[in-house]
Image (cartoon, rainbow, N blue to C red; front, side):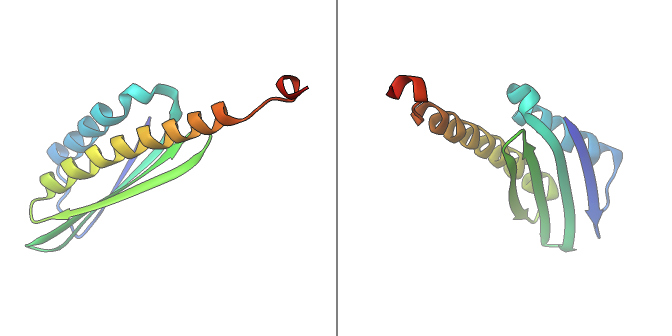
Length: 109
């Protein structure tokens, strides 16, 4: 799992960086090799508005993204990492169901 963290107008301390990485590891580690590159954007648009956008690559299917905002940047990170974990699982389940629903040529003959 490769994580890139970008900050825009937000104070990115080492504590916040390690917190984001720990939350992502907790949310996505169960998916193992299916997790590709992860991009996290942290943005502070003012004292009452902090945004956390997470984009994750599902190997070999594509990308998913979530965005959360809150007055507390840590709360926005919490909600965004929980949401990306749920969405990641849902996309993998959807791909698995689609694969099971296909009928092979041998079975049709």
